[in-house]
Amino acid sequence: MPLASRQGVDRRITRSRQALRTALIDLMEEKGYDSISVNDLCVYADLNRGTFYNHFHDKEDLLTTFENEVIDDLDDIKDQLKDLSVLEFVRTRLKQEPYPLLVELFDRLRNQGDFLHAVMGPGGDARFSVRLRDYVCRDFIYSLLHKRYQEHPTPFVEYYISFYANAYLGVITHWIDTDMKESSEEMALIAMRLFFIKPGESITL
Image 1 (tube, rainbow, N blue to C red):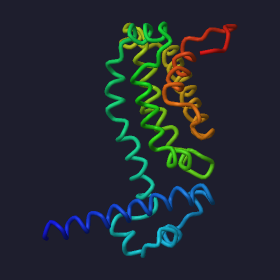
Image 2: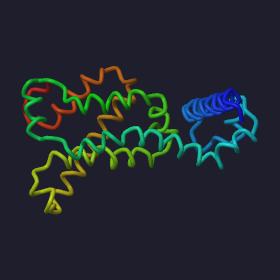
Image 3: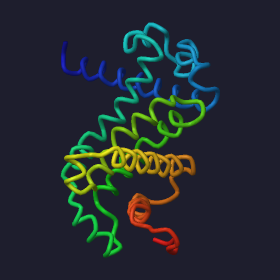
């Protein structure tokens, strides 16, 4: 196939996928994922069913594909979390500066904000919130543990990780639910402050 023809095909594929992504988001927000049919998606995206099935097996495949894209976009963040320096994290907190890796995490989430709002909302896919928690939040908390707890986790350590991982998922969810008004830098500072805050302390950044 000539290059110009391939480029034309690629552009059509990109447009079709984008149209279906928009349709999925808007319909999840409007009536919930469980009530959406493939025909609904095609009508909303102004595509025929043949085009849909050229790209996806069914609506579950469509949803999973876009969920995987969000997770894949966080791959390098997850890898960097494994090498997070606790001392550097503490020093950054003491200087009241946002930790760069957390800023990058919130930037990535913001770029997927429309999809995240729909998929993590009441009409979305409850499984995805759990997946995001386990993929990012647990690793973040684990990376801040002392090495002896990482190497020899006790039942209490597991509860500690679970407690904070769910708490940070709650932070992310609230940010998304409230239209991501805070900047990524502000959210990084909030995430850091929440980790270090003690009962009775002033609730400020």
